[in-house]
Structure formats: structure tokens, C-alpha cells
Length: 264
Image (cartoon, rainbow, N blue to C red; front, side, top):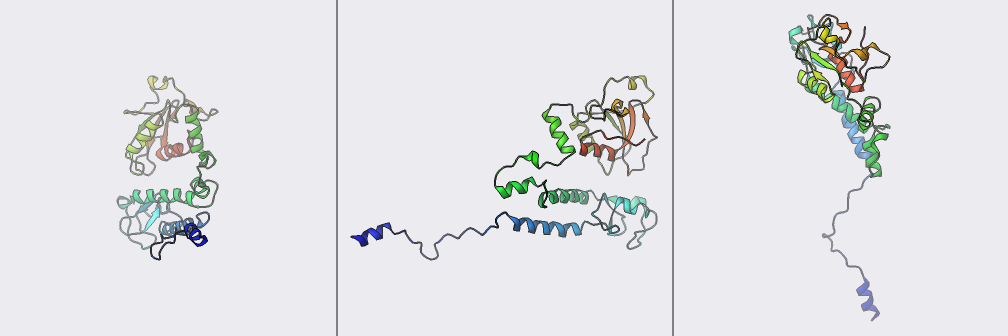
């Protein structure tokens, strides 16, 4: 009788070959996967370096006649002469901005913020602790932080009350993208270039909410935007409510969520 009782209490055995495979061993906090990802990112970034300054490319351009790629600032003195590496002749009409490569570099920068050990790595904290962390603790400071608070407090959008005229050609910052940013920021696009000496222009009764309160820029509500890298450079305009500004300034304003001061 005791033997029968023991047989009933015995746990069933799984025959060899039918036992389900065990789950793969995981490192305690996922460090292995992160390390492999960081190593892959490091290898990729080695391919995204300027052929002249060897830093990560900024506004990558090719000179047309060769395969070398440079930061736009690194070859400004080479136009009309030749590639500083292989001496292939380089002419202004052959210089091309590689937008796809520029997008890849920006993506790599975002991945690096996620993968490396720093206080901004909110995704990493969630994966390690296996719970949803409060994103405010890990959000990028400056612009993104100001933008979130601005929206939560129902304050005016970044370009609320501002008007923008896009003059000349836009290649590095496509005009369609700039228009979308203006609209998303609460601004308006002007189809005609504003005239600084016009009574109608100067009597528009709006104030730029996100300009610094101690600056005369808070009274400027109409901007003539041009692209820095193009051949179009309008005359200097800084009169009353109408100012001239480069497209790089506009992008910096979006990134910092603030109407930044313009050089005099």
C-alpha cells in the first residue's frame, strides 16, 4: 500500500527528447544586448566621420568629382580648387548636400543617447527595472522640457503671432519642411515679402510671446527667412517688426523652443 501511495505522489517524468527547451540565459540587467548595440553604433560612427577633420560629419557634403565626404564648413575654402584628400577638381555647381546621410547621422545621435550610460536613458531604465518609469525624469533638458511644460500649461505655441516669408531657394532645409514647422508652431506663412517701411506692416498688433522679455525682438513678428548655404543673401533687415534671419536660426529656435536672439 505504501508503494502505491508513493507512485501516486511521484511527479510525472518527461521523456528525453520531449522536454521543452529552457529559456536562454539573460544577463541580469540586459547589459550584454546594450554592449553589442553600442559596439555596432561605434563601428557605424567610424564610417560617418569627415575626411578632413575626422569628427562626426556636420551637414555632410560631397564635392561631386570624388567619393570623399566632408563637413560643409571643412571644405568652404576648397570650392574652386580641389578635394583636400585626392585633389580632384571641385566646383561650386558640383557640391551636393547628402540629406540621407545627414538623417542617418541625426538618428545615430538619438540612438547614442538611448544606448549609453547617462541620466537621459529612460528606455534603458524601463528595460532594466521592467516597469514604466516617469518620463519626466529622463527627458532631454532645455527645448523638449520647455515644450512639454508649455503644452501642459496651455500657453501660446512657439511661433504664435509670428509671420514668416521664405525667400530664395531652400535645399539644405527644404521649404516644405519649414512650412510644416511654422504651422505646427502656430505661425503663419506670408506669400509676399513684408515691407519694413509699410504702415500696414508696422501696425500689426501682435507680440512674440516666446522672445526674451528684455529684448526688442519681442516686438518683431515678421521674419524674412533665407537659407545660409544658398547664394541668396537678402539685404540686412532689422526695422521695427520686420527682421531678416537665416534658416539655421529658425531650426535652432525649434530645437530650443525659444525665439533666440539674432545677431545685430
